[in-house]
Amino acid sequence: MEAYKREFIEFLESAGVLKFGDFTAKSGRKIPYFINAGMIKTGDDIRTLGEFYAKAYFEKLGKKPTVLYGPAYKGIPLSVSASVALSKNGLNVPFFFNRKEVKDHGEGGVFVGYVPTQGEEVVIIEDVITAGTAIRESMEILSHLEGVKVAATFIMVDRKEKGQGEKGAMQEIEEQFGFPVYSIVDVYDIIEYLEMDEKNVENVARIKAYLAINGAKA
Image (cartoon, rainbow, N blue to C red):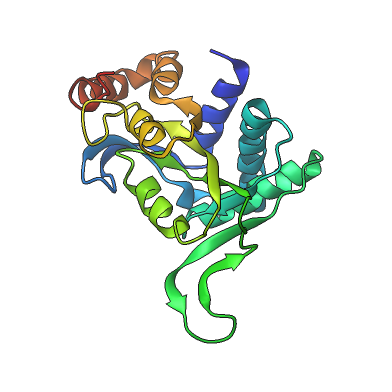
């Protein structure tokens, strides 16, 4: 396993973002582990997370100028921290996010921050994809921006689960919308990390059993 992947998983655990137990995902699936970006609560943690996103961004997109979009609510601090980290490394990109309820006074509208215009490209910053539900919701919101194209989505963890069919949720999103989805790590990296310590035997077994049912078949 690459050192940065191990460091990232260690960070997720220490920050309380990666937890093991019995949870329900947004898709409704009962899952044996949970990725909760809402557990990021300190300046140090959000700075570190932003740096990992920036590393992934530079690795996949180089110095390509885009606009970062953070879906409310968890995506908001993720997009801000990624924007700051990119800026510190020489790429100053704007960011924006959506309101859950459209504002009908002041400047109004559904978006806060920089609103991209025709010809600009957007990068969605999310925490995780399970069945692809959240990304489809984001695409519906972003569809109101005429002439704006989504260039990519970056997430923390690819759960390697099937989406609406037997294919992986990330693959379905890529095929449906025509942009790549990049993850810092995937569930098999997490399994490899856990297998380094015998105390994780039960968690590894539960995750593997879950993937045998819900894992992508293609």
